[in-house]
Length: 392
Image (tube, rainbow, N blue to C red; front, side, top):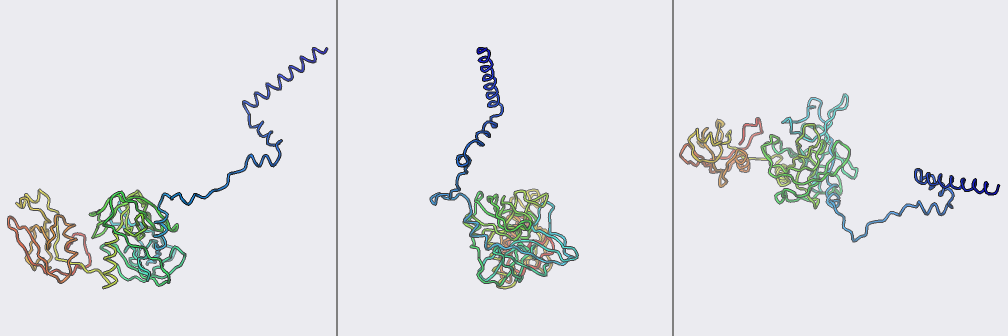
C-alpha cells in the first residue's frame, strides 16, 4: 500500500514539473505575472521605475541651426493681403513655375492672399514679393510675437518681383543682411515663412545653384536655387545662411502640383536691397533703356549673316525714335559691348543697359557685317514692361 502511494506521489510531481516546464517554455509571461502579484509593492515599483530625464551637459555643443533660426525668425512676418474679387486668379506665368503664394476667397468677400515678409530695419521697413501685395487694398502684417499692424505699401518693382512695405510698431526686430555674392553651391541655408498658413516654419537645405536665369519668371533674373522646402505662403519670406543673416527673398518654385519638389528660387539680398534703396529714395526704380529687341546670335545665324566669328547679341528690331535708333543702330547689327562691358547674351545686354543711368551717355560697339562700329547713345528711361520681347 505504501509503495503504491509513493508511486502516485512521484507521478503527480512529475506531471506538475512537466506542466511548469511547458508553461515556462510557451507562456513565460504567466509565471512573470504571478511573480509580480506575489512581490511586495515596494519591490515591484523598484523593478518598473523609469529612469529620470537628464539635461545634456553644458560642454556638449548642439549640432544644428537653432541659433541661426532664433536670430532670424523674429524678423520674419506673415502677410495677409486683401484683394478685390476681380483679381482672383493666382499668378503663374509658366505651367511648371509658380509663385508660392497662398490664395483663398471667403464666400461673398474679397480674396485673401497669404504670404511672408522680412523686417530689414528697426524703423519698420519690410521686404516681400510684388506678387504678394500686387493689387491689394489692405495689407495686414503679423509678427512672430503675435503683434499685428496695418502695412503701408511704399513701392514695388514688378521686374524683380520686390515690394517694400512700412509698419509702425515699437521695438521691431530687424534681420541682419548677409552677402549673397559669397554664397557657394553646397552652403547650408534656411527658408523661413508661413507655408499653408500653419504658422511660422523653418526648413533647411543647401544652395543648389547660383545665377539661375532665363526661367521666364521675372524680367531680371539672377536667382539662388535651393532645395529647402518652399510652399504656398512662403513667398516673400527669408532665405538665411547658417549664421541667420538674410541672403535672399523666397519667390518661386518649380512644381507640378503646387507644393515643394525641392527646387525653389530666391532673389539675392543684394538685388532686393538695391531695389529697396531706390524705392525708398525715389518711389520707384530707374533703369536705363536704349530701345532694341534682341535675339541670341547662334552659329547658324552668324554664318547666314556673314559675321564670321563675331560674338554678341543680334539686334532683331529697333524701336522708332528710341535712343538706339537716333544713334544709328540698325536691325541686323550685332551688339558686342556696352561701355566697357562686353555682352554675349540677351540677358547680359539687358542687365548692362538697365544698370545705366537715364540721361547719361554710353558708347555702344556693334559689328555690322565685316565692319566694327561704335555709337554714342543717349540712355533713356526704361518704360514699364509691356511685352517679354522688349529687352532694353
